[in-house]
Length: 592
Image (cartoon, rainbow, N blue to C red; front, top):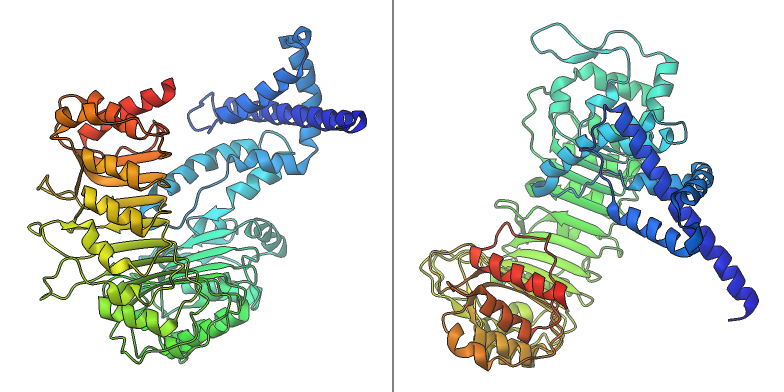
C-alpha cells in the first residue's frame, strides 16, 4: 500500500472511529435525558453493551496513551455529538436499537406486544429530548400498530357516544387542519395488526366518514404489512381503506367474532376482495390466507392479478385442505412465486397445473398419496427446501408411513427436507431411522434434515449412522424432536451411536436429538477417542439418568472438540440431565 493511500485509509478510519464514539456518546446522552424525564427509571431502556464496548474500545485504541484520559475523552465527545446530531442517517441507526419487533407469528405475538408497549414509553421520552430526536422517535413510535383506535383518536371529533353500545362516533365534522395532522401520523404506519374489536368499538358511520374523506385513496399510504386477523365478510370498508400500492405483505384470517354487522353487499365478498386487491395493491409479495376454506373462484382470480407475488401461504389447519377440484389450480400464478404453504386432499393421479414450477420452497400437508400426486402434478424442478406433514388413515398401522412415492417426484438436487409424522399413539414402538431413510435414496444432496415425531420416534443406531453417512455425506444439520413420552427408551441414541456419527458425518455442524442413552457410560467412556470433528452445536431434550454429568460432557467434548454453545440460549424444554451436561460443556468451551 502506498503512503498516500495509507494516509487516506487512516483518515477514513479515524473519522469512522470518531463517528462511532459520537454515536455512543449521543446514545448515552439520549438515554440519560430519557431517564431524567421519566423519573430516573432505567428498567425500560434497552441499553446495548456491545455498542458501548465497540465504540469505546475502538475509540480508545486509536488514541495515544497520553491522551487516554477522561478530560481528552470528554473533549472529543463534545465535538463528536454535534456532528451526529446533524447526520440523519446516524440518528436513524441509533433509533433502530429502539425499533419494534414484529414477526407475525401467533406464538410470539403476545411477547412482542409487551415489548412494543415498553419501547413506546422510551420513544415518547426520546421525542421530548431534543428536536433532532423527535422525527426519528415518532417514526419508530407509530411504525407498528397493534390497534387502530390510538391512531383514529388523533382526530378530535372522535368520541365515545352515550348509549348501550358505547361505540365511537364523530361528534362533528373533522376540520382540514385536523386531517392534516392526522395524515402526518398515518404516513408513519408501516405495519398494522387489525383485529375485530376495532369494528366493535367504532360506529359504522366512522368508516363511512373515512371513506368519503379519502375517496378511494389509501388512509395509510406507506403501509408495508397488513394482518387482518378477523375479517368480516359483512363489512370490507376497513379492508379497502388499508390497501395501498406500498403494501407488500397481506395476511387475512377469515371468520370473525364481530358483533356489529353491516348490511350484506350484493357483490360477493370474494369478488370485492379481488377487485380491491387488484386495484389498490398489485405489488403484493406475500399473501397469507388463514382458514382459507372459502377460496372461491372470485378470490382465487385475485391471485392472477398479483404479478409480483413471491409467497402464497394457505392455512394448513383441519378443514382447510385444498382439493383437486379447487379453482386455485385453474388460475395462472405469477412466475415470481417462490414459496408456497398448502394442505391438500383428494388429489387425483391425473392432477396437473403449471403455476408452481418455479417454487424454491414448498410446505405441503396431507395423506402420502395426495402429497405425491400434488408434487408430481406441479413438477417443482427448482425446489430447494421441502417440508411435509404426513397424515395417516385411521386404519393404517404401518410405521413409518411410506414415503417412496413422495421422494421419487422431488428434484434430486433438493437440499433441505423437513418431515413431520402426524398421528401415532403412546404405545407405538420406535422405528429405526434407517427405515425412514430407505425411501429417500433418490435424494442425494440433502444438507439439512428435520424430523418431528409427535408420538412417533426414531432410534439412531450405529448402523443408522453408517447408512445416513453414505446417503447424505454433505449433511450439515440433523434435528429430531418429539413430544415428551412416558417411555424413556423411545427415540434414543447411545454413546456408541454418537461416536459413529462423529466418524460417519464429517460435514455435520448442528445435531439435535430427543434423548441420549448413557446407561453404559462407565464401560465406554474410556474407549472414546479424541476426534477433530467440526460440530458446533449439539442438544438433547433429555439424557438418561447418570450420576456423573461430567463424564458425559467429557465424552461429548472428546468427540466434538469444536462445540460453541451459548449459555444464554434455550433451556425451556430441557431435561435436568442435559441442563447439567450442557453447563459443563459451556464451561469447557470457555476455557479453551
